Image (cartoon, rainbow, N blue to C red; front, side, top):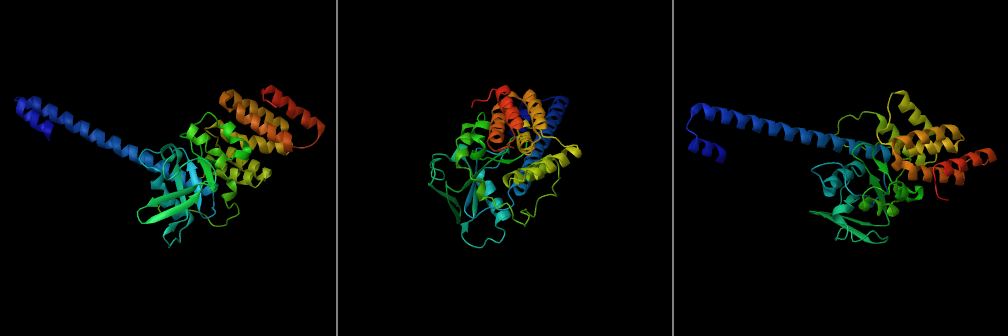
Length: 307
């Protein structure tokens, strides 16, 4: 309105005013379209997050906190996600205390919600008339890159080393992550009623393979990834090959695991520490035949993995 008033006040030529108004209208329509597209992409990313979370975590122990640095969305914070998280995992919630919460370390660390990243500290999250009461000793740390699938981080897999180049707010939280808070054998399908039907692309198979990895079902890990590849799916993030490489090596397919390791390392040199963690675990628990042990040792030398 101010711009229109200024145009009417200072520009007397009718044709010039028509051109200016047409330009203003075009810019306004373009801006509305631009904003609508941002929100459309944001909602699509939210749906991806909820779907992948439900695939990877079919159920959680009550009073579990999901912890991450930040999610790849533009307009929602951790408290925005806490309500639908409870809707997914506690659909019959009827009392005042929430069963689950999600917290961003980047904005909450050091405040009343998340005082520190030390164990046995209380967590209190208030949402108007309801509250979540948890502990830093009952957490699952998750990570969802902009281009890649959601994953549960595990200090027992050396993820603080594998993901050392990520945000310090994420890396420092990894030692608190306890995947045993995931109920892996739950038969119910966690879901939100307003989500669109999920597309079973790479991230679906990856989430299920990670769940199988947690159960140490190496053959199922391989079967799921092989099925995804047969359908033409591949990961965008090379780090998503790590579980598959480890599963192949642990069942004795050392050569296949080694070839794939070299392939992903050539694609992204930042994955070297993650590969080292994989091959160290293979060395510690892999097939005990001497020829395999020698090949694993040689792989560790080739990748310059410190003992």
